[in-house]
Image 1 (cartoon, rainbow, N blue to C red):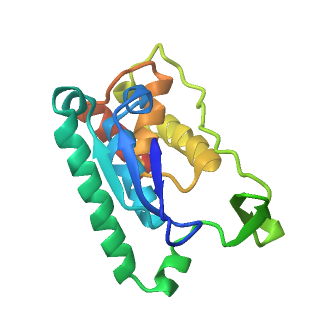
Image 2 (cartoon, rainbow, N blue to C red):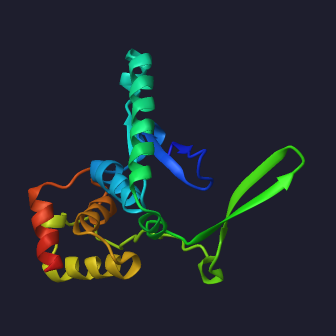
Image 3 (tube, rainbow, N blue to C red):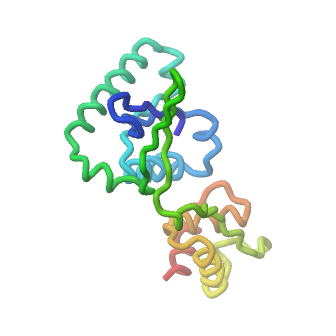
Length: 189
């Protein structure tokens, strides 16, 4: 998330998340990763997302600023219409709002309620061992199936398209065409 706008009326809640097509966008390995999946995951966790494209910002900054302000107002109205129960269910981690008063400064933070959630889970990408002397689509189905199994054991649950991405990356390829997709799909089956 590049920028999150806090709700001044409800500490601990954010009105909207703003995504920009900066370094994170351009360093992603596939358009599916950077566009659909990232935004879908954020929205599944209750975020309202507004996207700003750098070319639009540079060419028409005032227009983009007005669109962003309008998106913030629309998000505020949408959140007002949602019930409090649906908001609390959409959090990825149950939290309790903690406020500490210090002279003229008020610090607001979130505290994890359940101690079992304190341990961070680090996501690990599978690095399958492959023989790059043979093309992916020429690799026997049984061998490809073993590679798929290695990936699933490390990353499950994982989408079929991500399995294809791991395999093509292991072979050092930038994209997967119809032959590669078909070969990997056969191995998955």
